[in-house]
Length: 442
Ligand SMILES: [Zn+2]
Image (cartoon, rainbow, N blue to C red; front, side, top):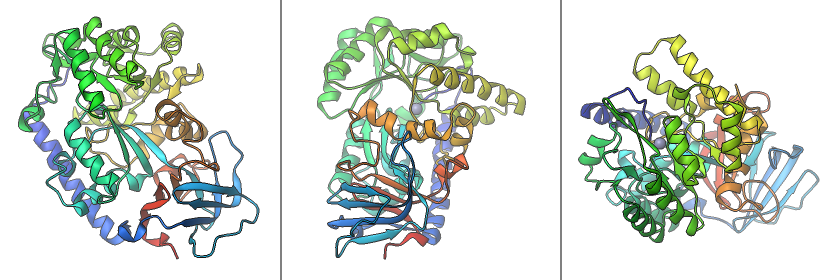
């Protein structure tokens, strides 16, 4: 979650945001009814699945395979080939019709906060599955990293997905975030109160360490600190004291998990660097262009960056900024992504969906294309997050032995970057979890 430091979000605005999400969700449902099918029990993994006649991009740096076949057995990839492959008798077959097939996408910055997901025990499996499709799987996301939500609720949701009752992506989560004392961001105060969230502020290193430990033991996959919390008023951005940031980050690292930071400004980035944070959850256009010296420090600390460019556009449009002002901000963010990436920094695709209500990823790809080519963008969706969060290896690529997470695209992103947003079919663990209507298996 983030917000521009000078914006004050009144209590009403959050209710409005969620009303908008609801309205948007019902629109999306209308689309779902006519344009797509919700994957259900009939899609439970069969022994074998074959995707034939595909243009395969096995990995961002690999040579494409035309007229290729991907074979899947029991949730794992058993063949990726351009020559003839014997398809097992009884295998489900998907004819890609020459369409592009890549590894499943990651969205490395989302929030499990949409109304249907926020009270995961109170909604039907069908409603939750539909929401997860609208938000994530229809855009090709087989894995999402939730960067602040209620850990208890997200665990409930994950359990319903794990058992197969609910159809959705793999969800990693940091659970409840860490705010500095007096640093609950102005734009979430009312929301947290309305939903009965406990205070997430920490005043002492020992308190931060204890809660981080508790959350990690309860299943959190990392910690998220607000290294710079937007509190508004005269203070603007409140940096987290370094000893508190370090305490939380160290617990994550002790558990072998990543630490994320919401930077907001230069001081927030400083706290993130000095506390050992692994991932900056946003660019920081408010602080102006990044220079080589700052980027060298970020690189020396092996930090990754999630651009969240659409977020800045949405926030500025909300403030009725002029087209020139928006363009200027997006230009600075693009500069930060470009200089960071060019110096070898790792970019992770992420949109802050759940804070913003834009589920369509088209804008993010367009904005990223100012700084990255399509292969770098594919890496931000697949191999980069797999390396960062899943130990790398075969994860994030289409190769024999890898988990069968795949996306079939309508259009080739090598020709038009927005092809990444046109998904025909999403497969997780060898199971079809989303397909557009014209992509029914035969
Ligand atoms: Zn966020």
